[in-house]
Length: 143
Image (cartoon, rainbow, N blue to C red; front, side, top):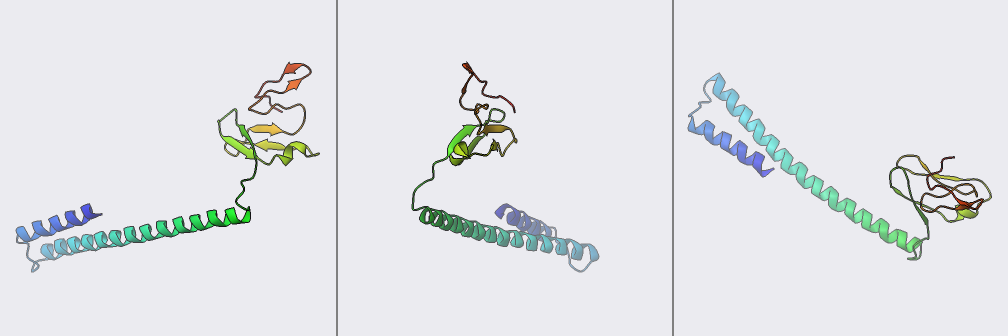
């Protein structure tokens, strides 16, 4: 933003160097435009300061949330099953309880909606091929 202020200062210097009088209409207009540009430059500086304050505040809130999450979970990280999506490569994490669930549950990639895991015996996850009828199932089998 200092570039903007220096450019406005340069215009003010040019205006004074050209001896533009505020007595005529053109001089009043040109000087008013330069003054408005100076006010814009000052406003941008204020916005930049406000943005820095907001970024600091968000960082503080993020740190506080991280601390709160650790306190709620007792400092222990939960175990998740990790599967890479065969279509987009996104790593998908899901609760290991899904594997043992009685209902058939499909886990889809949040990035491209590709099914990456189904908790039945006929589906091979994207990361590993399962043995089906003595043959390896393809890793990207569709359901």
